[in-house]
Length: 261
Ligand code: ADP
Ligand code: MG
Image (cartoon, rainbow, N blue to C red; front, side, top):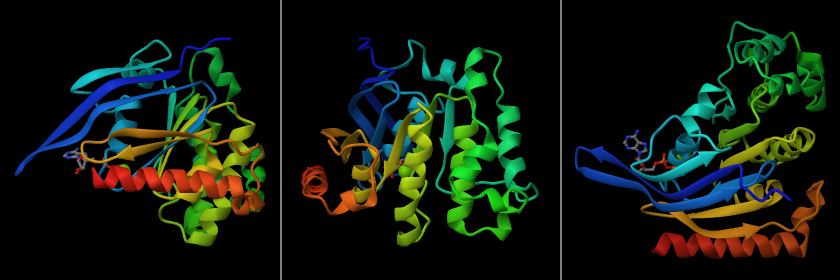
């Protein structure tokens, strides 16, 4: 068995200069992620989650420590288009239809090597999240939840093997949001992609993840790793199970500890 992690973050520190001094966003931050894993980062606002995601994604350099992604630097991976990003807002092109929004990025990101051949069929993906009737609709004709589903499909349609999702459901209402997690899982389970997902929601973290990494603040670092033992595929009724409640309790206790420190 190959036990080398796909993503390895060792003792990373990152500070930012502000008018009133220096903010230590991350210090002593370490984690490993295996290929194909779904890992969630959870923690309060301002604890460095987005900073860590941007470092892994090759958008920001560390002050110290080391990040390796598939034996290369994050910036090399980024140049090879090995990351797909799903931000908080869907960021669709308003003048393009749903299907063209997905296809445009797929074409722009087309890679020369064989991995791009694995990029999925956009129509099949859109069908799997119930958007087939809206292929030729424009973003403004869709609800917020539908737009975010398009953004998810767009990320999965890329050849990129690693998806970085920074609170993609944060702007959705609670009912839409809780159904989105199952749609995401449905696409992810067939994709083989590695996902790092950021959220404030404990329920979302438990239902989605293979492992939940709990952030402590300031400076941000991982204070607890919680393996999620719920079977896959995950279904909504599991949210009432004793196993779910226990995972949620462990995460909540860790968050409380991290907040007090
Ligand atoms: P989170 O995503 O967990 O809410 P962030 O990673 O966005 O937290 O931010 C961590 C800390 O670093 C915050 O105090 C934030 O103000 C600061 N920070 C993040 N990015 C920058 C930046 N580009 N310039 C200055 N400060 C920043
Ligand atoms: Mg953030």
